Length: 54
Image (cartoon, rainbow, N blue to C red; front, side, top):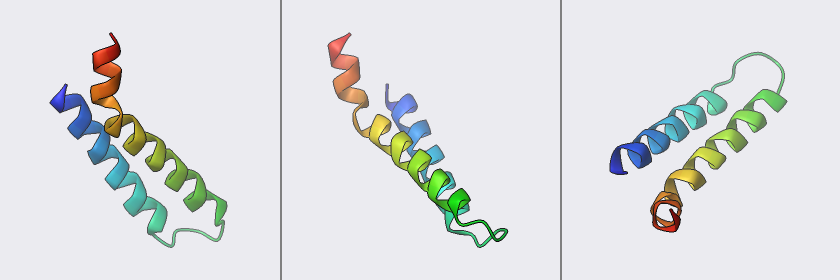
């Protein structure tokens, strides 16, 4: 379980860094990646609860 949680936190960090980079002129890309990173971080945070439910 810890590996799953760590992997999801790592993905969230990478996505947040990519979202913060000024790539291209479209700002919606950064917002979309930021929200995806937040979803990964929330899933990693909730992993112990999800594991306890099953």
